[in-house]
Image (tube, rainbow, N blue to C red; front, side, top):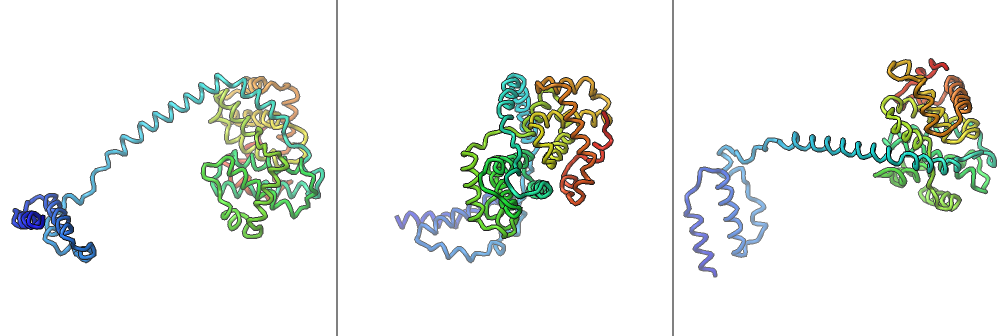
Length: 351
């Protein structure tokens, strides 16, 4: 065996050196592998300086990066795939829109009411918490649905718990609601360590957040299912094919509506969503003349199966709240800061 290895080794050393750099590289690789058969330790090759080898003096064609041809071929199929998925989603919505809305109406009964009734937490502090949630979730690029679920969990817990909470408890409840909503909605949820260090700024311990999460789950009987205003908005906009025209305005108005504790207690999520869509339609109509409020508003109300007069009344109340938002909450800037639509555009809306 040693004689065979020796002959192969000599044959490699006597072979002609090719002009092809790839061939030279191949010969070097074979030489290294054969010497290792002869029980040469690996660390002998760690000190080899390839730059001093004659190979480096030749043009290293094989080291040039290949042309990235794949970038053109990858993007196009993905666009086709996304188009196919959107068509499939639209077909699903068209085929199952009525049962989905019926399910939302069943869940609509669970809209949190009188969440602060049994606690010594004032409404302005709740509004401040909502504005802070907008800042946190927007900064961490969380989905809009995560925000709406956070508010729903916070209000629902406060409305059902038998514990009497004070103002200083709201920070822990709000942080825990964000933590739970992220785990429920986000693909990559915000980790507890980040919540403790970056969001709570170490004012709340990880144990406190865990204990409050367990308490919230027990109070809610581990049932986090329920509809939000955004669920209803997106469904109606998809059914009526108005998503790209109205979404940004409707999203701003829906967040704004949640600031008003009295308004949320007066109406359900379904009714608030309807009012939001009515105002958004009137607002966008001033910008886009192709959108007719006379046609669209009755369609929205009939799609949600609500009374026309009551829906217009609710929309008028929300519009008045919207116009007085900056006066009532002068120090809360995050809603305006992180919204794509401007409150000033809504203030021009008239019925």
